[in-house]
Length: 150
Image 1 (spheres, rainbow, N blue to C red):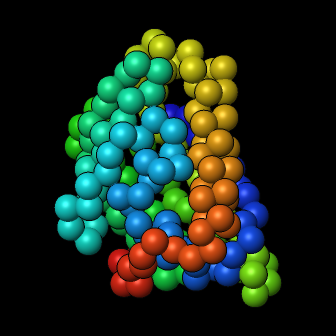
Image 2: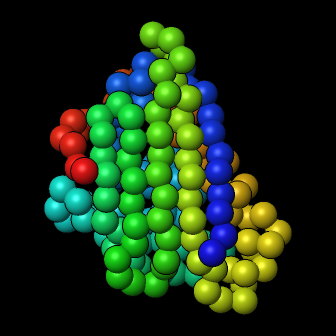
């Protein structure tokens, strides 16, 4: 298993950052390589990705979701093995620290090489930077889901 940890400060209140992160189907707007996400149930998402010409589909289950604090997941089926959590930390009324922690298993030789060269870490950092731009330009979330999963 390999690990990635990245964080970014965003200029929106914690509830705005969290609410946007619960809108999984909007991830392709700021996550590079994510073609589509379908929210199938409150806890199950289906992902379609294309990274460096490698197409993958997989299901991920949300294992924990605490409003304004944390969203955690793990893959349950398909062509990827990963899990992780995104946590939200209030810095003040209009700033939030978003922290991503992810464990993943590179399967192919290309994925293993990309991991060794820091590709996944750079991609995660870029995704967080695009999330920052996305949410700060909007100033509000595209939707919200305030339920808890524990």
